[in-house]
Amino acid sequence: MATDVFIREDLQPHLPKENIFAFIAGMEGEEFRALESRRTIAVDLDGKRYFVKYHRGTATAEILKNLLQLRLPVVSARNEWLALSRLDVLGINVPQIAAYGKRGLLPQTCESFIVTDDVGTQENLEDLTRDWQSKPPAFARKLALIREVAAISRRMHSSGICHRDYYICHFMVTGNVEQDKEEGNSLTLIDLHRALVKRKLERRWIIKDVGSLYFSAMDIGLTSRDLFRFIRLYSGMSLKNALTRESDFWKLVFERATKLKSRHS
Image 1 (spheres, rainbow, N blue to C red):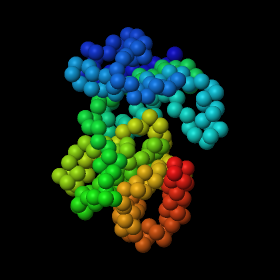
Image 2 (image 1 turned 120 degrees about the vertical axis):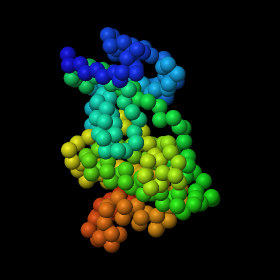
Image 3 (image 1 turned 60 degrees about the vertical axis):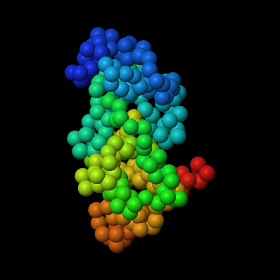
């Protein structure tokens, strides 16, 4: 049975290398998600907080159900490990990997886990923008966030990574937006358990991500100019060229967002 295990040096005194899968499966902590094939908890080890995601074998029926719904099933922690590793190299703030393990080849019998550092905040971009319609933010702050989200999105997609749950609630506010506006490192991207990692993404995956992002930001009071800024920054072109050369792309993004909006109304 193929087995792959990594435990960061500072966690080695707390996670036994022998029987590590049984140990992770039996850990107790603050539960955030409990599904038949996946569990997410937060734990404290030596005064530091970590998130632990444990995946057990996925039933054939669940795999088929996802495929029939044209959804890629999540069968292990491997994609999240790959996505976090690649995004970190790209300079995008993500939770740091403290431990990872996978054994087994078949989705039905595969067992895996990933342990990440807590990013240290509970405020996300959805929380930060909740009152923007009634209390508009300073222009500099809004512009800094649009720039940062566009830069993260552009870098991620051009490097072959699709988040697949790409909503503003998955951007944690981990820095000072005003202070970090030049460096663009005030946000940390989380919840990459469904991430798709490829050499090059097909356009449909990018449309799904950007459409989901737009849907999640539809009601925060963005203006047409704000949307045009995002398009220009994300595309890396002048606005005129972006809307001319990639008009079909942005039309499909809008349609995706509108469809999600009607589904959740």
